[in-house]
Length: 249
Image 1 (cartoon, rainbow, N blue to C red):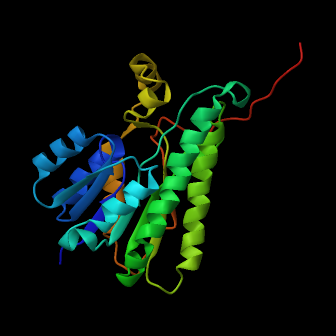
Image 2 (tube, rainbow, N blue to C red):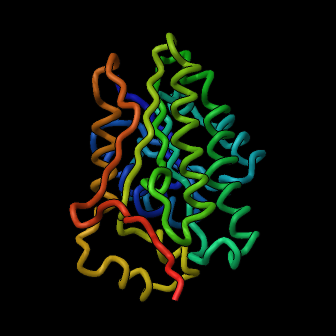
């Protein structure tokens, strides 16, 4: 029987790779994003088993209306992948823009919990699954990570809280926590600075969106009695930050 996955943020990076991976594996896919042209191109390339919803994930009314209007089998969601998210800015907290902080909270936290709560009754009824995209930034702080790391720590803890509340329902919950993945992430974070992105990933052999998409598919297709609580991934060339020590001259 064909299953249906709902993937937020499907217009680029991990989200787009996940849409392609799940469609290729025989899933019915619903995916969201702000860029309607990219969504349409994705649907055109993958066929009738992909349904797209164009709205800003932060717009709760638009999100609820889009989900309420899902047609036929696309409304029967078996798996939610909360992928939509972003980082903005690399400045230390004392120099950061409050608007950037609020946008990260609105996207990475508020929108994620709103989508989850909206789809949760159906996921419980279908004994489905939830996969949340967190980050190694949830565990390992770094300079300039401030609110982004805080939002991803929320995603990690929220995932554990969901597991506790959903105990006995058969619903699986997983937090996927990647390290360095070369996507549009750094371009967005730096306000469109492609050179900064190229410099960050140069020579690092980072993970790709396809790597993470394959991991998402593996978790989703495990037998239903198995739950991966948390899965942390890094490229081999990335490891944990050392302690920072400031010295007086």
